Image (tube, rainbow, N blue to C red; front, top):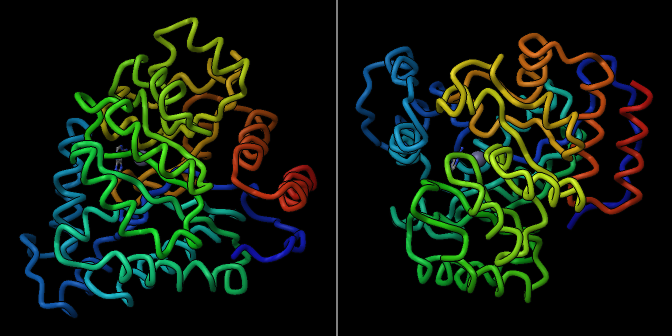
Length: 337
Ligand code: ADE
Ligand code: ZN
C-alpha cells in the first residue's frame, strides 16, 4: 500500500519527475540478461552483450517486440523480477524520478510457465522497498497483450484477482494495428468494477479511431503515446478539453520509426495546442535512454526551454495516480528546483 505523504527533498540534479510509461521488461539491460541467462541455464542466441546490443536496430514496433519477448526467457524466478525492478529503480533515482508507474506484461510470462504470483511477488518486493531505498513512490500497472485474445485478457485478469491490492491500473500494449481497444471492452469493464484505473496504448502506430475507442469504449484515464491524435482536429479538441494525459515517449518513437528524427517529433506543437503531455522512456534498455535522457534529448533536438521542461515535469505529477497531498509535495519540488 502507498505510504503517507513523502517528505520533500531538495534535488540539485535532474528535474524531479514522474515516469508514467515504462515497461519493466523493457529495462532489461544486456548485462543483466546475460547474468540471468547464466543463472537460469537459458541459452541466448547472442555470443556477447555487444552482439546483443548490435541487434537493437528496429524497423517498426513489431521488429522490436520480437526481440523484447525473446529476451524475457531469462526471467524465471521471483528474485529475477525483483532484481530487474530494483535495477530500474536505481537508475530512475539518478534520473530525478520521484514517482514511477510501472507496466508489466503477465501473459508474456505465464505463457512460458512462470506463474503470475511469481511475477507480481518479485516486482512488488522491489517496489515496496523503493520509497525507503531510493525515495521513489511506485504503482504497478498490469497490461494485456492486445495481439492475444480478449478471452485471454479476461483469464489473466481473473488470475490476478488475488493480487489486485498490489495493482493500481490496467493497460493495453503490444502490436497495435489490427487490435483496436474495442476488442477489450469486457476486461476493462471488469477492471473498472474492481476499482482500478485504466490506461491504454493508442495512436502509436494505430489510427486516431483507436484513441476515440480507448476514450469512449474503455473509459481510460490516460492515453499511452497518442501521437497520431494530431491527424484528427476534433480528437485534439476533446483531449485538450478533458485535459486527458498523453504519455509520450520521444526516443522510442524515433527508434521504432514513428518519426525519422527527433527533430520531427511533434512534442512542441502538442504543448502549444494545450495537450497535457508527459515525457517517458517506454523501453529504455532498447531505445537509448532513460527518462531524463529523453528530457535532455528533446531539449537539445527541439529547442525546449527551461519553462517547457518544467511544464513537462509538472504534467507528469498532474497525470500520475497520486493522492492530492503527495501530488502537491512533488509539484512544490518542481517549483523549488
Ligand atoms: N510493449 C513494450 N513497449 C511497447 C510499445 N512501445 N508499444 C506497444 N507495446 C509495447
Ligand atoms: Zn509502451
